[in-house]
Length: 124
Image (cartoon, rainbow, N blue to C red; front, side, top):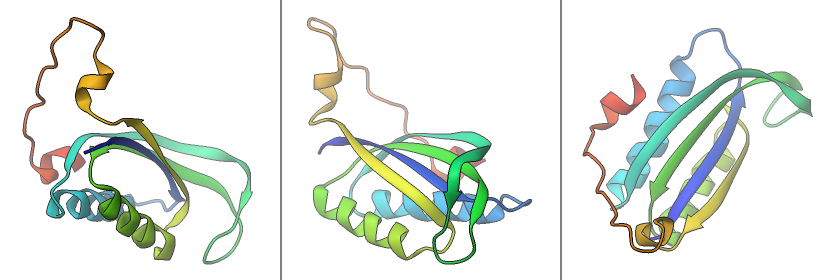
């Protein structure tokens, strides 16, 4: 399975429950379809480089977060469909980092497997 990195910009709301639920939904979608979520990071609230509009009024501030995951291309297409329809999402992009985890390591190095962590622990 290819390794992907997703950057997502969501509408800013003073409480983070909507972001938490979106991250949880995205991670569970990958996990339920046989993928692996490797890392989830929050970049915090930032001023957008330009006004953005999607499913509502123009926004000037957004919440940024990233997710590194392995999944099949079919699951990635369905995840893109979920994000496209979600009114909380302003923009997102997915980059293919590598075809295999072994491609990330330098020549001669071994790959260390990641620790299995539950979805609830990733989001807290």
